Image (cartoon, rainbow over all chains, first blue to last red; front, side, top):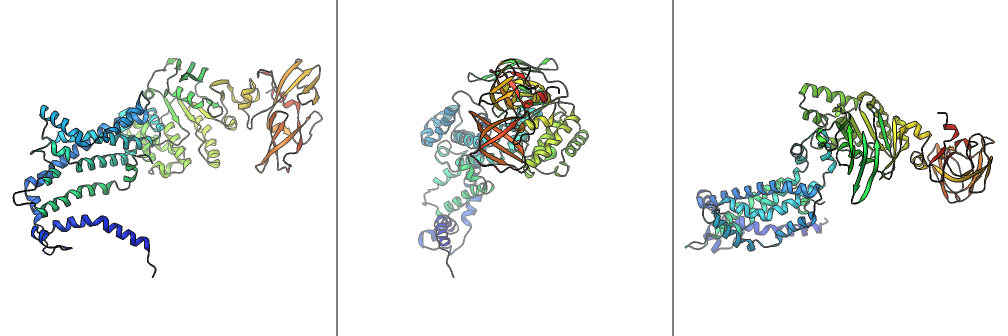
Length: 267
Length: 359
């Protein structure tokens, strides 16, 4: 029998990639004692207690709810701000448009830590500290430029003649945008939303700096599980598994367009 | 309708001062090579672009600054522009929906229009699931269903293959006759202009060189530029000078100034004639014989195109049938003097060809 060499390479590669995730799931189904005492490839003493902790303890599931709240807020704000901006960049020429367009992306070049201090000070002084909107707004700094770039790429693929035909047919600008244009770039909107979601979901530093109790994110919760009795490995692993799930779900819905999204819509 | 329109962009004039009056219920063809300003002119008419100066009148009303949405126009592009997210039915219905018509009226109008454009069996499909020809029919249907007073067609058939083009081209005059609107049809092909009839405006580098009845322009072009535009392949030219009743062509060929050219005053002129008037055999005593060097021949089956060089001029000859000719050889071609248009040195028409005179 002929052995397909490339298949073997692929299998090893996939195993290599999946191993940490498997280990996480493995850990989440073990007791703390088993994690610390023995080395086992699968749980000897299968338990769902770790998950039960997360689903019953408000400080744990509250973290998820907080995260989802500001992530959704951020995604909605970012995409709705980016849509008109991207449209303007793709359709009109104005003074300095190319520079501005590039400058937008430079926003992403600074590490979030740079902005942690000013945001903290600013939000504290205007009373936004420890609110969902604070984190959502802080994340738009990084997400709006990205969404503008992605959407602009998709919009550029729509011929300008469609706009003009719609105006000639009698559509107002908003009618055209909503009824004709948005369906055409639906996949672009999906991808942009996905990228905003993803960034906001995994971002730790700003969300931790800007929240304390009421809007504490799941990532922040996870970093604060060190208690008097030491680290609760099992619960932490369970939280990790649950954190992967939303991203995996979202990525499933935009899987066909994701490559184009990574190329910022310019394919 | 168009009054002293000019369009200047980046200090470069795109459209020179243009006056054009399109009458109600007429078919108007804008004929010109690519980049001659056809599309620009149509966009100005539609109000998609604003003229730098001058004004656009509609029923004696100035509509220069009026929004596109508020104008009574329809536009069909060379590319097949439909709304990909809507079905064919909704595509055709969309202008009517925006007029707030009741749905029974819309349904009736859409179906009638779809019948006319042979789209009835595709109403539930999305435009991208149709062939190119059908997509363009859909775009045409959407333009027509509005019943607007001005329908602008910008090379609507240029992106279609030969067969479909012929088919749709035959339908456009019918559609026009039913609509009672002003049609403006831009094309690069003289044949299309002739097929559509009506009026033609020939465009050259942002200027309208002539506007009038299509057949008149074809037969009696005002100048050499118009003649060149309105001839496919382009008209051939050579210099001639007349003194007394003797004509000398630039290559030294002499001919008698027969009835066709006898009215010409003495002097130097440019002679122009259409490729299809060149012949390989001498059919009448009058025909003048020229020698030319054959560069390329193209055989389409029923016709042979001969690309030749005659002195400094490039000539194209179009003869019936398949001819076996050796490339690079001298060929003798014959031209009946009654097919010669004469232009003055600066390109203005002096005498139309004799055959075209009485018409």
